[in-house]
Length: 212
Length: 119
Image (cartoon, rainbow over all chains, first blue to last red; front, side, top):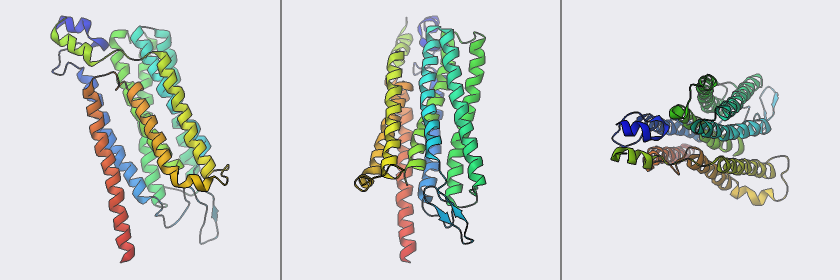
């Protein structure tokens, strides 16, 4: 038992039947369940795609019976920037983890801060996007696109927000020097969650924004 | 080191270097640029005569690029390439169910709509 505590990586402090840390196994199991959760939301979006009775639409202009004209509602350039930053944040968080495992506190704090900044930008982008869409006349109850779009991207945005809060708490701990290499698994679990949020967006971005 | 400690060390191998992480990041960025570029030349402001040729392949190409990005993040950033195969199994099994759910529901709804239209 003592040998395990000293030799095992990432601060494994107890024996397990699998020889793997139970906390890491738990986060992977959670991520697995989240895959099916997002699959149901993506399915919901896809089966209702193109079946709207009224606009505004995602990719096509629409004129209402009262004569009001609506442009296609999605803004690809802004979301592309958000997508790129979310991808970069995945790189930043693995660099932070690498810093934590090597005991490099400066790298840990710096890269984790950059990850948080990217996450906050992404959430800000989504808040702007939702506000803009509501002003353009697209709400949760306007049409099938509105209902499925807000549900899917809203749940993803909630996950990003939770991830940002989790990373901020770890960043504060890192600033106080409370994430030594032996406790780097705490960051690795948050990083796994963050990467999952990223891979979900890797699917959502083309499905919602690029495929007409 | 006892038998258990050995299995732990074998279960969770050393993670890649910062250089490899940066290379993967660059590839992810290029693949994203390709996705948006593909959209621009097919449906966007830069759509030209070639758009009609690309359109039939647009969705498969986008899905292929998306799958490549997904695999890169899972393998290198989530360390599935180095870590225990048990983690890969825990991730891939529900992912397969998820894919089956999406494809199954789309087929089901397509039939439903087709029958609804035909009366």
